[in-house]
Structure formats: C-alpha cells, structure tokens
Image (cartoon, rainbow, N blue to C red; front, side):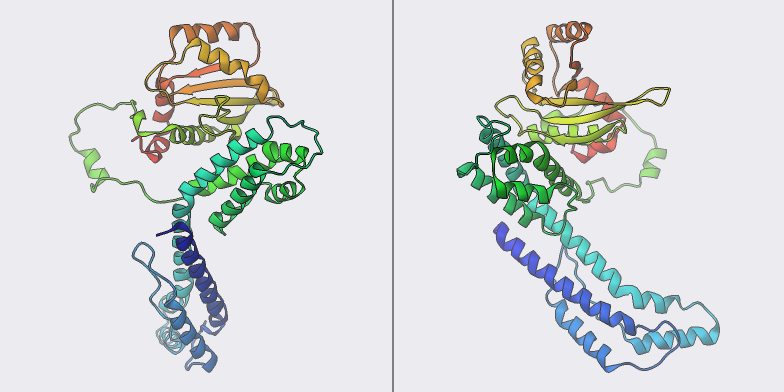
Length: 389
C-alpha cells in the first residue's frame, strides 16, 4: 500500500473518530446518574448515528469499536434496583462510561499506527533537510539580507510540508514551528541561519520525540519470570552487546537515549546528518555542573558517534575532530565525547590525555565499546529498547 493512500485512510478514520466523539458529547448528557426509567427521542437518534459511524472505523491490530451506545432505560433500571437493595450502582456507572473508554482506546491505537507508518519517511526527510541546510549556507554570510531561492530552498520547504503531513495531530509541537515557517517565508540569508541554528534543531527534537513515543512492547519469552528466577539458573551474566545489530543511525539513536537518561544532561539533540561530509556534529548537549556551595554552571558538549567495527579510532581521527570544534561554535564547546562501538588505539588514548593535560578546550572523553557497555549495563532498558538485549 502506498504511504499517501494509508495516510489518507488514517485521516478519514480520524475524521470519523471526531464525529463519534461529537455524538458522544451530546449523548453523554442523557446518561442517567440516578434511578430513572424511559428513553428520549434525541438520544435514540444519537444511538443510530453512532451505529452508522462505527462502519467508518477499520480494525487496528485486530481491534475496533463494535459496541453501540448503551440503553439509557437499562442504565436507569440498574440504578433503581441498586437503590432498592442499597448497594453501590457500580455496574450502571461502568456501562455509562464504556463509550468514552472505547473512543480513547481507538484514538490511542490510531495515533500509534500513524507513528509507525511515518517513522521511516520522517527519518529520510530530517536527514535531507540536514544536508540541504549545510549546503545552502556554505557560502552565505551570516548577516546576509539577500533572498535565497533555488532548488535547495524549495526542497527544504517541501520536506517541511511533508513532515507536517506525516505528523498530523500525533506530535506535541514544543519547538519553534511558527518561527520556522516565518523564516522560510522571508528566506533571506540571515533567516536561513536562524533556521539552521535555532528553528530546525527545536523542530527536529519534536520529530524525534514523536518517533520515540511508540509504545509497542518488546518481544519476551512466554515464561513466568518469578518462577524462572526461583529456579536453578546456569551460565553467567555479561555486559557485552551485539553492536552489529545497529547501523549508524541506530547507534546515534541509542546514544541520544543514553545521554538523555542522565539528569545532568539537558537539551540533548541531533545536529547533523549521519556520515556528513565534515564528519558530523552528531549530538550535542548542555551538561549541568553543580558544586557543594549551590553554584551551577552549564557546559556545552559535542558528542561524535563512530559506529566502527572494522577498525579502531586512531590519533588522527581524534585530532581531526578536535580541529573542527571551532566550526561548531558559538557557543563555546567545553567538552567533546567521542563514542565508538569499537576501540581506540593506544596512540589515540595517549594523544587525548596529552591534549587534556594542557588544559585546552575542549576536554576530550573517549568512550570505547567497553565504556558504553558498562553504562548500558546500568540502564538495561535502553539497550533492550534498541534490540541489544
């Protein structure tokens, strides 16, 4: 099925859900809250409308709403019976609340299905915008008032439009969406710098958060964990991880989740497409440092991901990365983390140690696979969420 056809079907389904919610808002006022008998012509019409609209709700993972609106005469009769025998009318309340519960369940499933459908295309579009922005601003002065128009700007606008279409109403928009639209419209050189440095990173965070909102469970064996834990267990625990299961983008996403899990890290975000020509500003964060006197200081840290399994990181790889740090400022970069799923050569470690001894910025932290495996052993849910457990 074509993605656009599926999205159109989901849009129509969402419209049907909205119609059902409107019917329920009007019908809910007729639901008895105490002993009563009889029905009402308007409520009967609303029950018929509800039944007609249910035909517009396709199954999602094998489930859809099938129950009609409750019979208000029957609900009233339950209240009467409970009143006569002096028991709480719990059944009456449960029957009266069921349509609301069904609507909430269906909308949740619909939003989850839309996120699934959009995830891969959103990844493609965000990477496209990353590359186009870098290319567009390569030869543009920061304070330029020249209006930029051309294939790159049109592709960026089209990508933003498609992202809006893919997200629909499933994403919470906390970022600078309105600023992004305004700067895209003005399109002068300085506007594009605002887009690249302010608007797009915040919007990209919303997109990433939407993709990460999926709550599908991870597969687990059909076993009673308590009974298994009480039995005789063999073997030993290991922190080693199957890094080959990840591609470059998957490794960056793992790092993103890991870095966000530390309370001293704020504003964690992606900065450049994976395998970008300048070797990428993969992730950045603000590290909050607190001392015993109550003082607080923020340091900007760049995190470069190297999903290298075939060779170790060499001194030139480290020194080249440090040399490009100035290109990533302002603001000043205080720390540089180089994280790899492989190893660092002894010379690379020695080079980083000598650099740090000089006190020059940035302070280099080397995270080989063993360091990552130790950190993830303390946060096993993150490794499991990326298929490494």
